[in-house]
Length: 229
View 1 (spheres, rainbow, N blue to C red):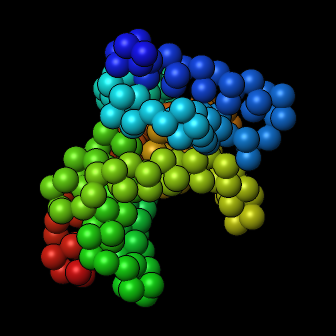
View 2: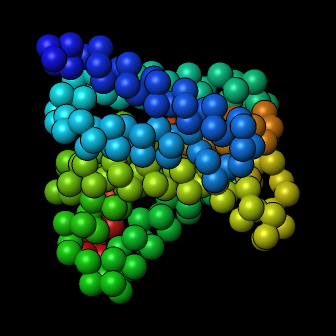
């Protein structure tokens, strides 16, 4: 099966799995059937069922991962459309993202200690709220396990995508800017995809949060880990 040993296999399998996920999501109309979750499960089941090494799949999967960076940059488009709103509320927006990023790190550290997790696992979970392209690099720098970081990042994104709007309703958060900032800061690009469904302002603010939260996390993670771990 020489065709498996080509990048085409990983790309093709990823696209087909995600299309199936989209189809199921549209049919059920439920956020619980997130296309990304379905695609991940289908790919794992397929690889295990046919005894295919992950390295073989990742020859094509890594090509898709490569486009995470450019795809994140494209999220600046809705932000540009809301640039006036950003100018009017620059200080509270930046402070909100800063506090959200700091609390995301501190909560992981203290919960990790509470549950007596190994330090390397805590380090791997710390960058989970930033987009994958950033979180994996942070994980490498601070001594975490990039593969575990990637899994935690995906879980954080999907969780925000599914339950983010519900949490906002429970706590009666109705301001579009606040909803967008919360979704983007806590659950990066996957949360932003849901924020864009909620509205243009939510999507724009969530897009902004991805970049700023990533930058803040890169700067403060080494400092906080030295103090708190």
